[in-house]
Image (tube, helix red, strand yellow):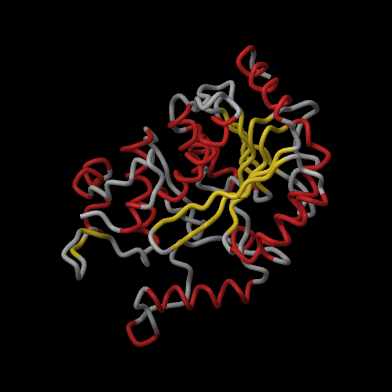
Length: 320
């Protein structure tokens, strides 16, 4: 029986039918000991267990996206694969609007993943689903080293996923791109919290919902892990995306669509105001639902419809 989460995923999401744990344990035998029957009689894993979550992701990536080797260093953010896939599919829909409703596929489409992290998950899914090329950037050299190991360990990814260090903590896009580089889209899952204290409060709240507290031996850590800069930045999500918008202005004609995930609906109004001040030509908000959880994709472009049509024709003719 499908859960509400599975029913609300994007129509092209491979995980709408639920998790087939028998199939996944065949793809990753190490996952099998972590599978048990929950109180509703369904197979599941303990999502409060980081090791189980990592093995589940390894199995999903291997079985559905052809990623033979995937792992994370201890403590790194362990993303939800179905949710990350939804973002990729929504981006594909966005690009299709500028391509006469046809999703552009292949390496002529180039995407910039801001904050690619140790998991490299967006490039892995985006390349597997649509054949896009990716540039992943990050401020954490250790995270990039882990991501590079994943790329190097999987045949077929060489030349398709490039990784680049952002050396400045004060910049997001500035100083990271080469002269005249063009991108069809950017994507970003920004740090949500504004301080370590906020991240700790959130961890305790999530841990409580998972039934883990001091009485049963639980400890207040985020069940999906995450290093400091993956989880928080000064001002949190709102400040980060405002800065991203400001830094997108000088690159206005070098990207078809800039996008970012937005976790809190309260952030949309001030961010739309920032987009107005940036003189974007058009912006979009796309809701993505996974059960009771709702996130948003905020997208903006500085290109007119005519310029977007010209972009499409250029992309079909050659690779930048």
